[in-house]
Image (tube, rainbow, N blue to C red; front, side):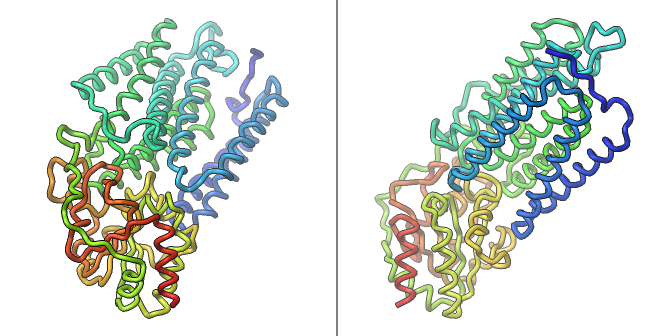
Length: 475
């Protein structure tokens, strides 16, 4: 490989200004993504910042083969464009997990390349014979975090995509094993100053292993937090490699992604009543006995119809709609918004209640409702609307289960115990759309709401049922 001498080591005010501009754009991107109303603008800021960073890096480095790099960018960008255009919203969580794995793998591959050809990355010491000592530590950390991100994201993808069970896989003494492996990785990184390839490959192999071990014990109900956590890991991996390569843009971008992902993970853990430290350690929400209650479909329950739902909601004063992953699978967000519009024409006060972990990734339901042009001022988070169920005439649950399950408040053996849930049981009437009485949700536990006196089960495809309700409302 031809040597590439980074010009960024020479103080160049224009390079510093370009990277500063890209950093500001990344911050504006995060600011924009904090609200559905400004999310598109935030994405544009992020794209512009990345474009500036990439162009600056290419211009300020003596590239061995610019055409090859441009071809690689075109291929990667083309693949990403096609996937993003074709992907269904229901598969977006899997896509995010897959992309996180690629970020982690990229960090590992860059670390491998820098280790075996440090001269190409300008990280040789003054003798020109060995890698800079500080670069070894940064390289070790970057490779370790990248490998954890890759293997952990692969497991998250497999669970989200149905390639493996979403149930927790609990290994004996898993916490002891995880802590021992993590401690060994840190020791290897600390002594990586010794020029021994075995240490480098030891870090890589153990980090790949701990990524699997950390994510396998985590159940499907907690997967949104896992996606957010892996997002944070991918950022720290990029930041560590940025220090290794002395690339300011990578440091800024990685730090922003890492810190924002960590903050989001903390917020979600707080919303779920989980311990943030337990998230880092792996296996939270998956203690012994977390198999949940057995299915109790032999209990008496009432079946409703689209006509029943249309009549009672049309006569109601207030309706609170709780969407879940089933709505995403059925792609029912557009017909749901049409139902809300029809109810508002009849003078009904309509609100949408979004749980922090509804769906399979942070903000999943918010994205779907925004796609259907549901007004932002009608969408409320759990803490803002939970107190209104006692006054609500109708709670309309479409495709949700775990986030409305009272077992989270009463059953200590449940895998969702301790997670705040919507108090739908306090509403005067409950309509619960699900395909059949046989399913118990992603966490695999039964739901007492199915069998309450005020509950009518609407057993059908979510989109078909809402379409029938819309027809009944129009009559």
